[in-house]
Length: 394
Length: 83
Image (cartoon, rainbow over all chains, first blue to last red; front, side, top):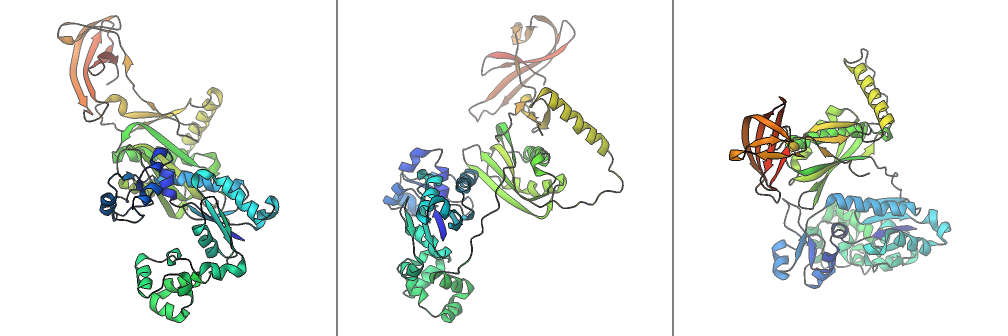
């Protein structure tokens, strides 16, 4: 069976982990800076006060003046979501994350281990932890499993038998379909409110009126395709971070810090010579929020200069001063052969000797004995803020 | 793995200073000052909760050493530092 585990409003829940009191107050995830001022997920208290996700900020504040806006914290959300996935993987599930808060997995491989589908799903809920209010749905097809999880209560396991799938989907709202908001309005205008109404329409007529996305949604309304769930490749932890003694906003300083992080990440032995395919830059903002940008490289590379030019421009997008910069290797490419140089570049031998010398110093004196000086603000009038001493243990 | 402990380079060290007329150092770490070469003020970050207000002196000691000391006007203490 295909199971879908759902944590509604995951972004808000993750952002509230450090401020649990706000979970009991009317709070909502603040709109993305520079985007349309629409609220993200809201707490149950806010919902009771009439605030709904996707509401305009002005309208929400007029409806509930005590509404607290929670800053987006993408780095924490990413970390917490990775934690949820790893706990599921530790319990034996090969997970296929759909988006933050939604993950799909096959129960077939673990049914014998836990003694059936229901105990396996109970184990999945337990692995995630009741603090997240997870719910799980299971069915023969992926979309039905997602629909079942959407209507389940927190901590509930809802299993839909294959012969009951059609009757189960029929009364559910159209909002479960992955359609843009204007399409819902269009369908509602046609008097369609439930999946069953939509599924009864002729396929050609739907395709003609709504295009490809409409046809795909129509297929989903009938249960969707019977596709196998492929578990993701096990994730690995390969990251470097630099904590600043004080908030940094200067682009040159940030670029220097990025250079230092790249050098350290490239020197990590776990990389085993493999080039980077995808990297992520994350930062902890001075006002408590966080920021994250992922960069997929067209050609996997381990060249410092190319990595610098790929990641450097992202630093301009930082919304404010930061206290910590983190560089994560999200995906490594398989090791590919590299063209050797006919003539060794000048200084290569000195570099090799230097690295070997440093390795010997570290081996004899322990970690933290070899440091690099990173100039972060050489123009500063305050001498101790001009440079940092960063341990180099790799 | 958490970020490594990052240290500041050239962090100020507490200094024992006796002052003379005008607030200039007369004795630094029990050594007489023979010459005050330069004096300047650094006022910065007054908009933060950790403002900086320092009066720096570059002095020459009896032994011939050049030393830079400053009085932190926020904390009311003396520090030595390579400026």
